[in-house]
Length: 209
Image 1: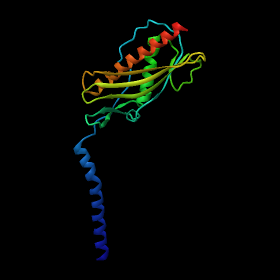
Image 2: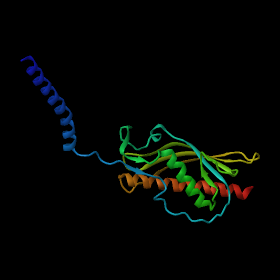
Image 3: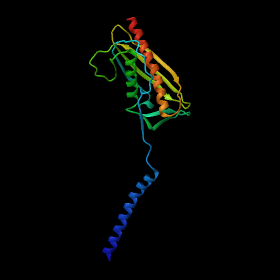
Image 4: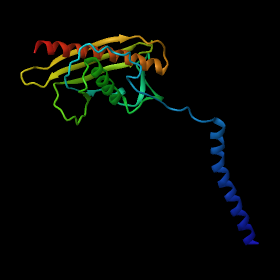
């Protein structure tokens, strides 16, 4: 009698264990799949730049210092109460810094007409004429939809008889909408302006050497 009761109890315990495992799985199935995470890169929607300079200079772009909210992969938005919202389902592929430095170096190469513009860190087999160091104080979409941008950057000639020069870009760029794609296009517009200014300063420096 005792053996029969023991077997019955064991079967009941096993059934309960299976039930406890299956119920969460069934609930997940009923709720449905989580939304897919979308990844974005900077520079893909930038308007083509016209190659007018043909300056065969070698430029190292970076490194870039970022605020804490840009050291994450999630696309950030500034809410009205000062809270920063990090979008878990829309992210920068590889992180923002990698996107930022890469996009600037590629666009600057086209703007200057040079094939010797690279992103830091670099193992390029040639010496550099200039380095562009960047400090991003702000680059975030506000609640109203405008992209707030404040970037300090330095043009550092590698020749010992030339001193670095420092610049600030402090502007707002409108967005066509509030979708992640609109946010990325606003970032691209800001980077296009920044790249043209960097190219202008390099051109000016080259003409005065």
